[in-house]
Length: 300
Image (cartoon, helix red, strand yellow):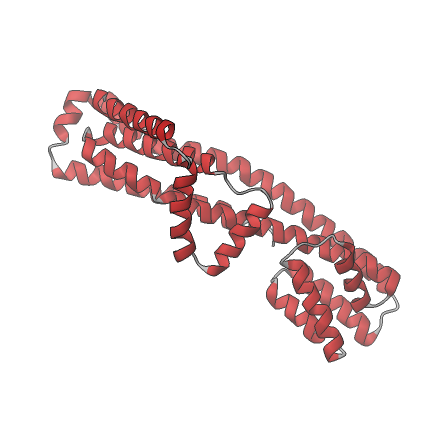
């Protein structure tokens, strides 16, 4: 244990000295520049747009936050695996491997933030379109009013503009509705559009009541989504605590067997394979949970 602590202290000391002596360019900026160049080269174009929107929303991590995340991951993985194998080489390998998880977690978090933003835009679009229609009695005029009101943001705002242009070009709203339905696969949008299409093409004596019911449905959906986010956030915290406890189960085994007995067992290749399997399975379990938490935002 003393060896790994000594090495970690040494790494931190080198980082501090490098930071102090670096002139003209901050170490954090240098790190961000190198990571950013790799990201821009290999990241999918769609995710680049997502991450750019997350930055505009002010929810992207700063370079210092990423640096702290990397440091914590590497230190935790190094110390934990050293307590598994008492081998500094294996600990360093796992520490490096843990850093490679950071881009994936960034990808998941950005997708979640973006999905939540899009759902909020969908809710704003539907609610305001219904209110505008009550005044204009025209679907096209209603979405024009929503577009010009400034309540929407890109990319949703640009897609509404495409809808408006398509409606005037085609002289009908069918293609416009189909365009947005395909772009944003939310049942609340499809139901609202279907109602507007029916009112436009067939008329409705009880359109006001139908739109009021639709507005109430949207309010109930939004309330349910935000309640679900709170519940999932609480579950996520408990899930991570449980995952960490799974990693520490080997510490309990060491306590029951005794450190000397445990270390002697490490000479057996089967024991080593089992320990590696425990780490990999636990890691997969946690990453799978992170994927579920960040992708299933409860919007539908």
